[in-house]
Image 1 (cartoon, one colour):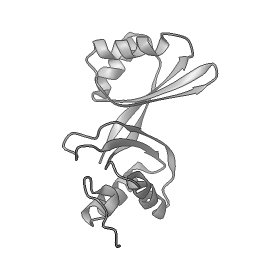
Image 2: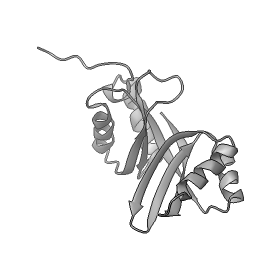
Image 3: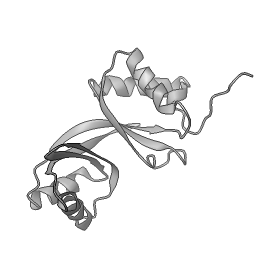
Image 4: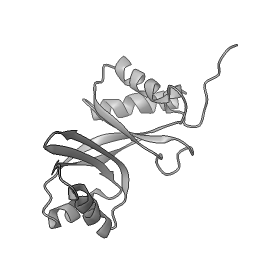
Amino acid sequence: MQTAKQITIQLVNKPGRMASVLDALSKAKVNLLALAVMDSRERGRLRLVPDDAEAAEKALSAANVPFDTIDVLLVDVPHQPGAFARVCQRLAEEHLSIDYAYCSASGLKGAAKGGALAVIRVNDLAKAQRVLSAASSNGHRASRPGRRPVHAR
């Protein structure tokens, strides 16, 4: 688990707009760890987590693309039923609100293979880090990539 910079871009819903933004990032050699797109009729909201936020910001500024940056939590989630639910439950137990979340197809470097990377915007980032780190060190299933729960028969 770690924090990262998420970049949010408001886009007019017309062909090629997202492609041009992503092309500007590609030319700057910025790789994306996660990406989500939401629409609201005339506009779309593109949220992305780049591997190099500074390079992404420079590329977007050079392309005259307005953006906002915010800190988010990145959590490796094992590819198994209920894994993300356990992360959400652990945050809820500590009265942390999830503003939004989305996932990427692969986890962070060094994480268990086959997992996903969850991008989570919470109301208290520092507390969420403490809660999920403590859960990991205490053996809480929500933060133990690659481990499957034992089911009694």
